[in-house]
Image: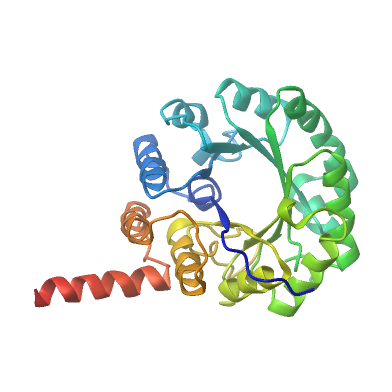
Length: 309
């Protein structure tokens, strides 16, 4: 399946949630809010803000309600939160989110190891959340993790991924993200998976979520574009990582995707310079080297220009 490249893509910025969730050192609430504000100022219209999960297991997200309470609401802006159970959903609803996110693993081994239940059991756990989301007219998004490889079982059969696409579709999900959680995907694999998924639901309801462990994330996004996918997740500064796989790196950097789309003449609605400045800033806040190659290059160019001025 080969389609003309889209004129516009839609990026869900996941830095505040997926990017920061596994940080070991606590990050101040004010810093998280400032990150969200800077991302919104850069043009982000779809922002995955936080998770409503037990602070015992994910202490970094303990301030979820406070962060959401201090963010603006405006037309055209979608603020989302991860809600793994009905208790999390109710807290998200009280915080006036626009979208709730559920997740399941395409690998039985991953599902058992990390949620202590089978894939089928995980779907049943999400059913009340899905029903509640629809009852309250909230957008519902699902993410299918380890769709291209699992740290415990290795290869993940295509049919396992498509089975979960069907199950989450039947829950009523408005969008289904297919995720390369440990960053092992290649372009040909990506195309096979998304072409198969597109036989189960329209392309405009599919999104790609890639990690850059093997340096293939940008290429994999391009492979998605060729199939006709135009929705993607990314994290400013390449924040994030998978705690379950040795050597796994963060999400594909938003800045790197913006450079790709700029070169292809594809509109994103995001300001690349503002994203680079935000990427530099948040990298300093979390005490990590700036992981966006495009961001590092553009920042160096700016420094050189200032020095020669």
